[in-house]
Length: 180
Image (cartoon, rainbow, N blue to C red; front, side, top):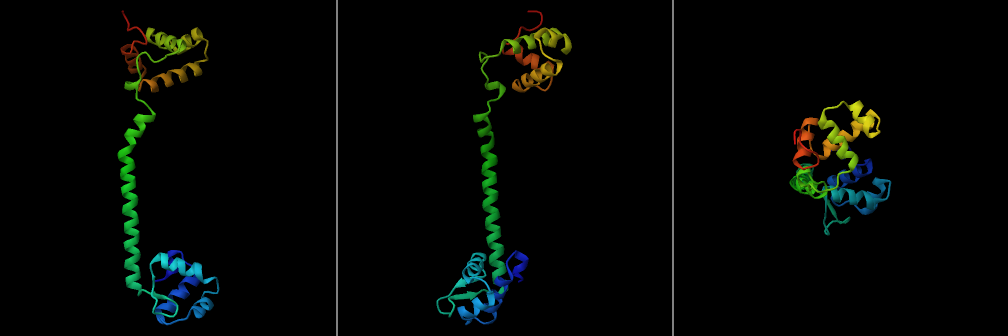
């Protein structure tokens, strides 16, 4: 199994191959092969699962044969993926509750919750059927400001259209329904 394909250094590859070929390799020989500090290389190989502690060997380690090492690696990756999947599933299950807690929906906004006089006036003007340009002039906004205000009100009312926003605002008592 080429460890370099897994992102390990040439030193890790050399140490693993040396232990695989000669289980009685000495720590000095491994350090010479690594041509780098040996401890980080050994730690990486132990973490990967291709080496196991073995107090009966001169260097205190045994290399797993490549098939066993690969099976061990696959098992570790599989377990890690399952853990991540469970965490993602838990997060997905908790998401609606978190959204409800930190972002109340329109249904949870109390009818008596403050609505600014400007917002109320904008809703009433739009409910009367006048154009955006005329409504903007009356409240002292630019047309762009008025449209942004309307978009914010639609989002607050969770309305997909201006008509839907008007109906929702009337149900909450924010504006009078037409003809009343």
